[in-house]
Image 1 (cartoon, helix red, strand yellow):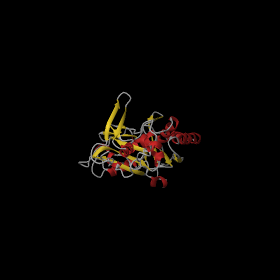
Image 2 (cartoon, helix red, strand yellow):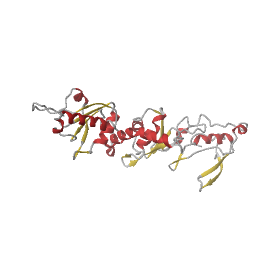
Image 3 (cartoon, rainbow, N blue to C red):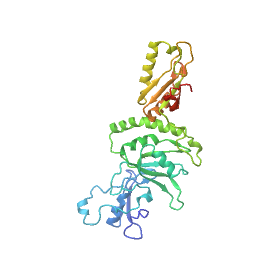
Image 4 (cartoon, helix red, strand yellow):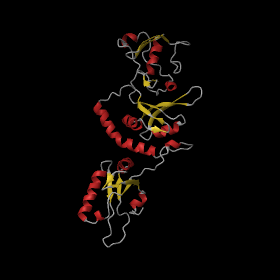
Length: 324
């Protein structure tokens, strides 16, 4: 209350009495003034010992009767960022789209954290909680996305992710998202591609050897994938077998994203050398689908061989140069 400027009655403790029920995990807190009780409502969702605390009025609270006693809403001038709460979350609102981001390495800068979070969408707000005396990061913060639809996608993708010697805890800051199980399953299904691309990119970016000027995403993502060890040159000679292979590739590889084209170079019937024979080139509509396919296909067994998948230079692909 002191940190956010909520002690409107002056110096001293705004809290005059507390009753805690440890068994059922709730408490009643009595404030010294009506105005300060209303200001305390702005602390809804504050993180205490890793848990988002829900702050509510008592069940018998009557806002109509209480209106005559003083303000029923928090002051709009409270400094909520001082305790890691996003601005605009006051007024006893649930704030369902506010995200808690914990387990951040202390040496991460705000710019680096934002770069990570904004890989899912534009941020409406971000607050990195810092020590008041030193100004150093406390290893956690809060963010709100401009598009609420990406909130669960970002949480699903980032929660549990290894960042150096830390493991991220990323979840909605409120206890309940207000979504049904079916809605949550739908969101997580949509998130699978994003999870794959983010985890894969982070794992290949040298996160465990962080240094000055580090880029969070060291691998350049692309839309064209090349598979090797997936097929043999002999299987491509027969027209009917070639068409079957082509169709199988479209069906299987189309599971990971929207395929624009599949190119499988065939041996020269005159015995000449054809670049790229034995390779499969997959052109995806976007980098997300391509990265998801790379993550899923690399290392799979096909005909007794282990498939290798790697990004192929787009300039060479579009120039029909399959020699690399």
